[in-house]
Image (cartoon, rainbow, N blue to C red; front, side):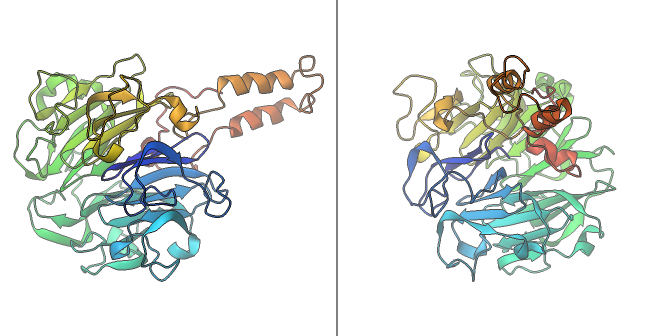
Length: 472
């Protein structure tokens, strides 16, 4: 994802493939080289020369657990940092692995079968990696069988789940929840779930304690519709179908399933039934699960949410709304930039990025999780403040770069480049005589693209959902 929220911290990726972080940092989860909290987004730097980046590698997506972080680069590496307990960083035996890591450590292909990493996901205390050959590797806490190795033993290093447990089919997308996991396979598009199932969050029709191996859900689970994307939260799961309908299962004490009541369910239930608030009419593209609330991005780029509002005095912007929203309700911003690409729900705060690369944050500001460079009153960033509506972060927090990797060459650079290649305007430019086809290729390459074999679900997760056709 272009944005990830942990327990009480936030990570974002910008168009230059750099990572910024802010919030609590007691175990180094910000990756900035110290254990100091910060109320300003700080750029994660290299260990040796303190230049921006990850030793020259280009970050595609970030992930955050409760107290640890991870990212994947274009080069196929995984980097992890923060709390090392239970082996969640995959570095035990390497890099002084029994110590918390305040700067990212690189896990190269030797750590996951010599294949390139495609995706990383963080649960509360464990980490999952998906490789381009469709295999799932994981490490960390396994108390609830969430690692999928038919036991409850922690793993100190990344360990592969036997592909036979996915029917020998390659996996195309993964999700790490609090104490359970989800994965989708190619071909049939079947969804597998495993781990904690104390309130039925796996959708297996019964709350059965723990499930230690990936177990497929019946094809009819979601009305016979294919799975487009999915996410897991604190003891619950959400699935988006190819028709834009959403289903939820598991814990529902605060209405986080969005099914109109507070009853937990061991089977997947249709969210927003009866089309309350026109939620189903919108059609949902992606979903993110927090601890007690759920967030959605619709096909037209609008934000929706359901669940608790206790800690945010109504996180959805309506001061007259009930404390909990048992059906999804629209979330409004105070300006016109309301077309969102991705959203992230955390324990007590949330974040979303617009198509144009702007960050919005809201929720409880524990230990300055929500950065103070918001567009708003100057006294609106005190310790433990609450932001009941999305606040626009000023671009200066990220050196005036756009967030996300889906952007093309910005307009100013495109114009300058094309002018320099013009036979007259660029008369002193070294690129004035370049072949037209070569120029076209250069411009196309200025925009990062996922690998051709990347599944639609993962493309959507990292922002390549073609809400609008890409610019130059």
